[in-house]
Length: 221
Image 1 (cartoon, rainbow, N blue to C red):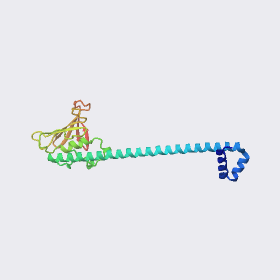
Image 2: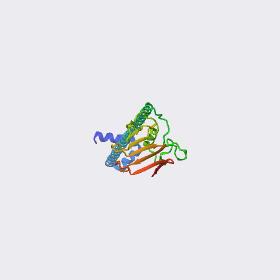
Image 3: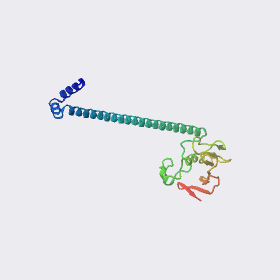
Image 4: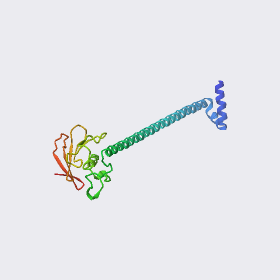
């Protein structure tokens, strides 16, 4: 019997004790080696299973790390957007103040029906009151210090020009380009304390719709 075989046999007997002797007696030397081969194969399979489990665990750790990195990136972008919005709001207020306009003044088109403040009205229940509506209404009726202010909404997706005609105490007209395509979508007018507008629904400067601000919303004529 080779030395390696004797070492395996002695090792087996030492580990198995009396049970090993019984197995050896029942199986014989050839059976013992077959039994050892099965044990070796089982150990290899077990090692492969453990390696696969470790590989899966490593992939899971990597996926979690990627998710955390993406979440951190989203939070960073959100913080940057919030800071940009803060800076733009600060710039807007400074521009209004430089033009002699109170940035905290209430819009001309308020109060809404029921005395609701337009700045506090929930957006889902105010489909007629857009962000651009609030911008325009803050200028109407207030002195501009000049006949015209161009693009008072720089940085926004829409463009607004406001006008103060001769003899008027404050801004009495405004034009809105909702998509900055150099075609005016709406024309607003303030006259005798009432606000009205003409709308080009097809973005072609054909103002086929005329509306008045009444009871907290736009009413078509």
